[in-house]
Length: 136
Image: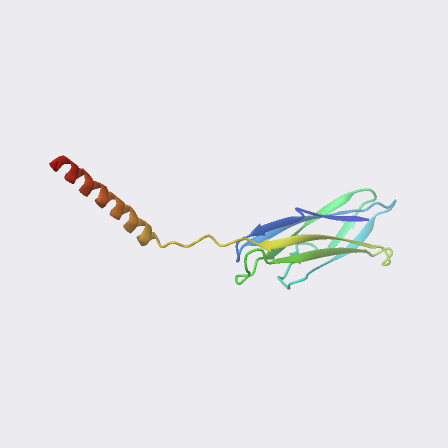
């Protein structure tokens, strides 16, 4: 069987959810059922929508995997997520895929009153300059 995760890497702001598509392909000649497990290196709590997939021979099925970027994550902090699929027909048959989840930089937070005050200040200075210019 083959396991793949798309996208291989993504990032978002702390507190945001990242979602991935996990595809398991049964490369065998008979239907098989696969147990899925998920883990990540930093404990960000990745989860799967489905932990069990029954797949006909030569076909594939998908499930969604998600994790939330921790609220305290620093810019570029990341975790490697691994999904493992194990055959129920033959438990010695397993395969895995990995992806990366990363924290993006938080945007600078400028209070709205400060922005408005700056705009008013620029407008006031411009008006004064025009009045002074007319007097001369």
